[in-house]
Amino acid sequence: MRYLLLGALAGFAAVERKGFLQAMLSRPIALAPLAGLALGDLRGGLFVAPPLELLWLGAVNLGAALPVHESLATAAIAAGAVLAGQALGTGVTAAVALGAVLVCAPLALVGRGADRLVEAENERLVARAEAELACHHPRAAVRLNLLGLPLPFLLSALLAPLGAAAAAAVVPGLLRSSPGLAGGLGAGWWAFAGLATAGGVRALRARRAGALFGVAAAVTLAVGLVARGAA
Image (cartoon, rainbow, N blue to C red; front, side):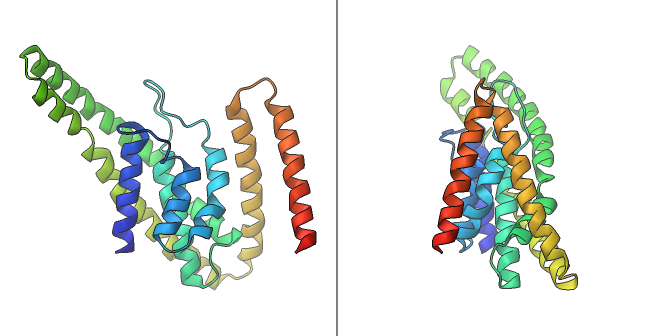
């Protein structure tokens, strides 16, 4: 049942991302917490959301651009991390999160390939819709437009649960068989977060992006140190 729910969420995000609504619900910062909530661990989804959003901040559907499928990969990573954390009984830790990223991040590239198939099918639907409009059949043209929505939904609804299931199997097995890896993977997660932050700054493409990042990083560090001291 949980995988069905995840598939429905990932499918909706794939459609919302480009074909319908486009209210930014498919962005990692929103989708990862939703995936965590759907699987019973909102905190785990929130934990992985910010680095994924920063990593794919520049992956935006504009015109004919075909970026990596950040929504598909995010749904799989967040769900995989939550499921792996539940299997281990630890929740989503830094080590679990990085393991889920390593297993599921390639789905961003797989999803881009799937998008190419969807675009090719949409081109055929557009040609048919234009023919219907030329024959003064607007309702038929509208129905053809709606036919472009099921394919991206089905592809993400299938691939996201498969990726999450792979992470839920691989990550706990790896950490149980080699407990010493937890420390390295945990450190690797924060290195990944730093890399994602650098990628996010680059995606801003603003003249003062470096200065803004420095100020934000300093404030974040100060808040973190104060909160740690208070704890």
